[in-house]
Length: 223
Image (cartoon, rainbow, N blue to C red):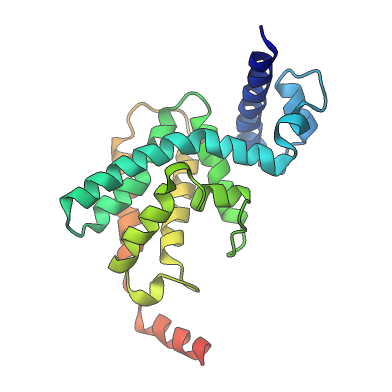
């Protein structure tokens, strides 16, 4: 086998090991040495060579799945734009369905969902460019998430779009938490009910009115 193929196999093995271990024990609950050992790599510097550090490994893991997720979402967003009518549930579905596909992806899809949910859950409100979480929200291949955010924004109450309410990010976070929970369960071949109901819930999060009580507090904060 030529050196390039050997290197690619090693890289893939490290990502696969990380998917399993990070999903089982958490992103910060596993040492990089354990990942290297689980990947069957005798060279203890293999992970640093391919990814530099933990953040680089996470970005590579997210990118592996993000290519497929982003492509699927862009197809759905193309269809939405061709329909030329406002439909918040269709947009909720466009966010959810590409991630649902990862539940039946035997090449680390279930691990990806758990890791993505953990990263989005622990991040600060300010997502730093180049961070692993940025790979989920802003740097996904094909730009499907920024595109989705832009399409959803005009359909929401204006005060819910940006800080401090961050309605779109609340919907994304909710969806990933539920998908992570599903991914931890025993594998199922029928996700129809879960898919429809999760889409219902994400639609409801996006469409929820901003109450007068919330508006009063927002006004007080802006004074």
